[in-house]
Image (spheres, helix red, strand yellow):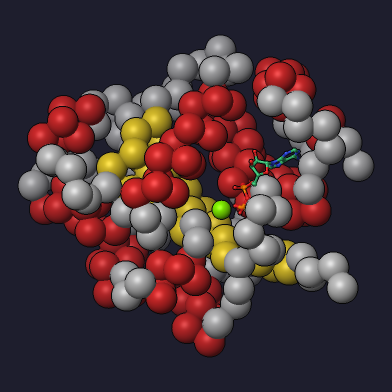
Length: 213
Ligand code: ADP
Ligand code: MG
């Protein structure tokens, strides 16, 4: 199935061609239409299977539609376990949002660096990619409001739990609007993750891509 049959805009299709993405990976083929349809998604597929673009593309499409109405606060929150992943995800958002006519501002925030430049950079951000601890610091200092979040993504959710972020993630969840889309990506599905996904996801589309034998 080509990317062009998944419901993406001509601008994003052009960006995919520019990136030499010719065919969607299995997780992309299944997740893109579900996310465009505003459904919750649980996506389990091994590392390297293209999970980032599987949510970045449809999230950008959906964001384009709401950006005119609610452009004053962060619309999309992506939580990642590490700063390296936060930077990578931000880059993928930047790469694909270049193609769009409506400007989309993406920022990555994480600990281990000073917080002040991040506070300054938050103005006008649509997509915030964050590690949990730093995000809570920014919330505690009133630097960011999470009240307009329409889409929450938990990337590498398995690693997030393994690194002990459960409590921080729960604190963040309590600050988000109840009405929102939730997307959870992981390489594995542990018992802990089963538990989180049952709390977090509302009638999710469950996508499990089996490893080739
Ligand atoms: P995961 O999050 O599942 O570990 P990534 O999203 O990091 O995987 O993608 C792994 C690599 O595959 C990246 O270098 C990405 O640019 C590339 N990639 C993703 N989707 C495609 C595609 N449809 N065609 C070609 N390359 C792709
Ligand atoms: Mg990934």
